[in-house]
Image (cartoon, rainbow, N blue to C red; front, side, top):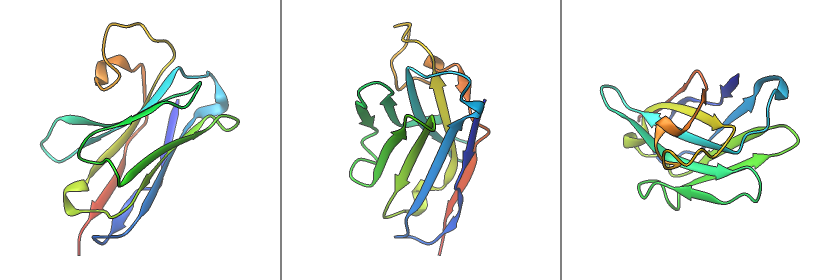
Length: 125
């Protein structure tokens, strides 16, 4: 129920914008997030944003380069990525949770009920 778009092949230093929409606007999320998974690596937290109020948080590795935002009317979350580095190469996944159950932290993939299909971002010269 999450549809992602925006990945691609870019050069170091380039910018890229990813988007993720709740398909058909079927639910209003409590929170949405981005994770990424490099080849052979775990799925790592990138950023989250609380739908009401817009509070956001970032992994230390992306602070200052990545910006998460959302469009309430479109039920879409965006990830603006600037100054891309080769180590940013990964499949990027968006995730959503309808409720805050309190069982996991927002940076834990287990918190989320819905996942996008993933979009590949490759940074290479």
